[in-house]
Length: 494
Image (cartoon, rainbow, N blue to C red; front, side, top):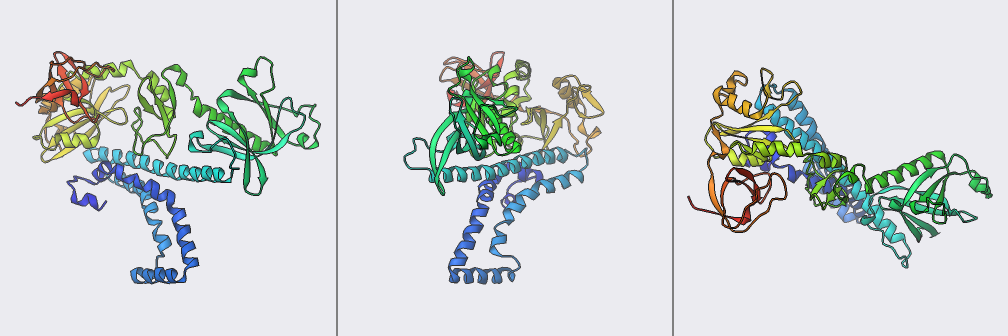
């Protein structure tokens, strides 16, 4: 936050919007906090000299009102308070002020960051557990327990046997996304690997009662369910398993964990289109549909090789059914010089900051709606374009419009001050009115409806250099508009 003070920031919301990526550092810090505090305690307990030096520094800094251990936790408390801080600002900001929309955007982004930080903490704990399991395994095991198996959803001691076995055996199972891994305790803190069952090959069948053929007394007191191998549904039963747990509650937890893991591997709607599989994304990667961060450290979402899209599990259906209608709508808008397609708040600022007052653009937001960005005096104002079933497009309740083009036409002729007193301007200059010419140095064939195809030597009008797609320009060839890789076109001097 202190770094923002030296930057050209117009309001508080900008601090959070422009520096969102920096806040992601809190994820790793918060995840390592308990480990750091434990290490500090251990060092101080073993080395009296270090302990005394730490206490001396605490006394010099704040008369030991706050211990070093407590100070380590301050950043964690701070990142959790930003959301509350923005909520209070929202309540104290009038609805008709442009800053209200920006504060809402900042609040949404900080909620996203908070969710990211919390999941990084959980995933880090999972990785520690996975590493601990690997370290406890016998060295001769023919499997490595790594994060490639996915998240752990359940672990417990069970009794297990195949259908054709006479006796069950006590084992310890871990339910990962990809498999159930079965171990035997050889001795204290030593796991002997037995086998793993690939969950995509099995389905759960709950048993109402213990089969009468089970003669072991302990089996009669347990709560069983069956893992049936899908290839054995024709009657062969050799590869199916009975799992027995000590309580009905444990059985339900185990079944839910298996079903959750199977849903993660083969998510609902995934077979309706594309080829989605669990994927580990780099820090800061966002979903192509909702534009929110992928949360955690590993297997945070899904990637489709066919559609080349990265999505959250809950966004898969929207990615598949997302449509041609929405894509066509945006493609039609691209013929207007004021529409730039998908563009981040920060990029819109850069595009407009050096433009004269009255220059404007309309962009799609990370939430999927539309926003109007406008240069006024020496700053850039952002207004959310609201939508409802009764009023297709509107900025304020007093005026609504059937299309974005109608909205733009109205505010080209009427000042905003009628509805927003502090904004005494009209829409004067569409951002894309000024174009740069370019010549294609390579051919490009569009793969999506909003892209522009061309051949070597074609003249291209470059109308947006800073879009929401890094490395891509928006341009026009004849009557067609679309995005294309910036490296394929050489700009010509004007």
